[in-house]
Length: 625
Ligand SMILES: Nc1ncnc2c1ncn2[C@@H]1O[C@H](COP(=O)(O)OP(=O)(O)OP(=O)(O)O)[C@@H](O)[C@H]1O
Image (cartoon, rainbow, N blue to C red; front, side, top):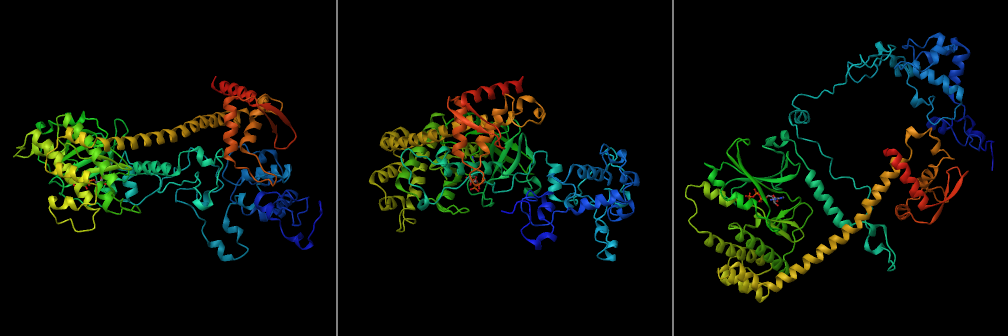
């Protein structure tokens, strides 16, 4: 090993890149063969020794009035960096300081990237005289031009930077005009903190007692689904881009939910659209269903709304508020419902490919599941003295795996009250029609199971052709022929209700298990935060208790022990299990002892987690006091 000497003669004349990049080379006397003479240091010494020879340095800074011969000759007044200045004075003062203290500084002022010269042009003047003519870059006319260089910087009189955008720019207008609009993060969010699951063929075959890091957190697919829903909730569009009103009463940040952007009057006889909105009262997201040009003549049209508002059912999207508005430029009827991010209606879920999501296959268990959920919805609605009235597949949304909800309740009641004719049917008749509607909906979905052409057959001919169990055929027949009340239906499908209930309980258990894994993480995050509150506080730099003999020193070493360990090759150890293990023991105040070693390996101490816990508590209490 060549210690201190150079190995390669040819490298002696080549400047060492470490000097250029870091300002010093830690291998300078340990075998690095390259040239370690710092050219800028040489210039300073030249400047100091002879003002006449200082031209190459002083010329680039010639604009500076503070770079006088006094300062160059070492006048203390000229060298003190007390007065902030954008001119060459401050850098020069630091230069002289650093020259005194030697080159071993991490941020070396002599490195070319850190030397603010007066003018870039002069630096290249030797290369071509034409370069002298190139104007210096200045970001705007207001910022000090080269001619003003040398005038000491005065924050009071400094021009204020005003970014100028062309008039009519949507970004500008949206920011200025829309008090509620916020630019959300670009999509997709960077999931850099999560490592994906390895493909099944590379997965380790773990012994029963072994765990992977992924086992400590909620399963990846569930986490991703929740994250996607959060992203969807955060998605916004500026009113300037969407052309929608900025707010309707307390609801703002209107963002269209409909994926196909087509408006039709198919479902209610009025063109309708659905938006995600945020309430200014509680900050929550809601769904706004708008129907255009509805002739609402009096408050009495909203008679049924209170009943709908008080209905709480797991299979009905809750209605909160109904109003009329002219904010869209017409007489719009607006209904406010609960918002379920990433939900799709039954038609979208089973018959369309949306984005990269394929339509979901319909199976008989799924049909039973839907029938049970719809029975629950209908039963609750009927108990409230209302009727569902609409069983359109576009008005039932799938909010989670196989979880459905009626999404447009209450609309028909209002529309009918608003129309001149009004309803001729009694509530009992409407409720009986609900049973029929439910049967037809399930029958329509069941038809997709059959390859033969049942589409054009009548219901009586079509039901026998369905490829489902006889029991489902029988239930559908009875429903469509309107021979079942909701109570009779409940009795008839009791075994299926129990099996759906079983699935729901399994799902609840699974979710609870996932939740319990995350509960521990919340505790650890608090511990992380506590340690970070305590360690490396700049105001405690001179505090003796943090010094190597101080009582808080073990906390510092413990933090290094947990997070900053390196392996035998000097590579950082990124072992999450170690982190969680240590923090759990700290939290529990275990009696187990650990060996803490300082980074320079000059001091080491043996301490128990119990003691560390006391120290952390004490330090944290002192911070709070
Ligand atoms: N409460 C809700 N929460 C979240 N999304 C919803 C909600 N209600 C409806 N949606 C979604 O809004 C989209 C549009 O719904 P829908 O088809 O009912 O509206 P529409 O296009 O106005 O209907 P149509 O034109 O058939 O009258 C669907 O993707 C649906 O999943």
